[in-house]
Every structure is written in structure tokens, then in C-alpha cells.
Length: 89
Image (cartoon, rainbow, N blue to C red; front, side, top):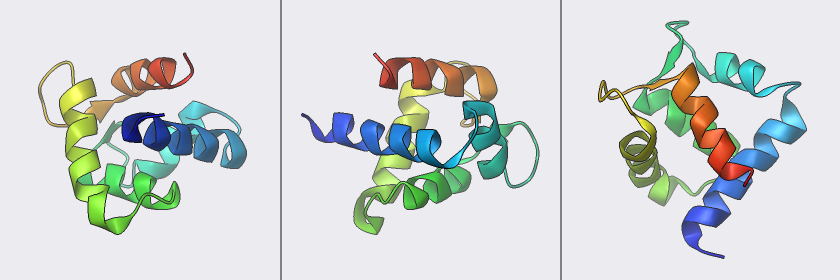
């Protein structure tokens, strides 16, 4: 299992074990309520998923780079859903 797969699995476990739905997880980490996850909000999600502080910044940047389809530097709900679909494959 690659490091990427391990990180995505930890995110999946966090969402599955601590939230009733992916949308509730998204809303929980959307601290400012703008319906998008910023890099700092993604770092909070990664911290809760027990991703090492050393790589958290790199991973949050890579997640945005990989899933930010509209190029605004944020992860919207629809982009978050696409990421979750990849995780659960």
C-alpha cells in the first residue's frame, strides 16, 4: 500500500467512525462555513485523521492540487465527494 493509499485510508476511517455522513464531516471541518475547505481546514482534517504533523502541510497541498477541479485553491463539497469516491474504490 502506497503512502497516498495509507493517508486516504486514514481519512476514510476518520469519516466513517466519527461522522454520520461525509457531508457532516465536511461541515465539521468547514470552520468558516463558506462551503469550501481551505488548506488550513484540510490540515485540521488530516490532524484528526492522525496524519503526522511533519507531512500534513505537504499532504494538504497535494490534496488540493489533486482534487481542486476549478482551480480556486479550495475544496468544494462536490470536489470532496469526488475525493471520497476515489478513497472508497
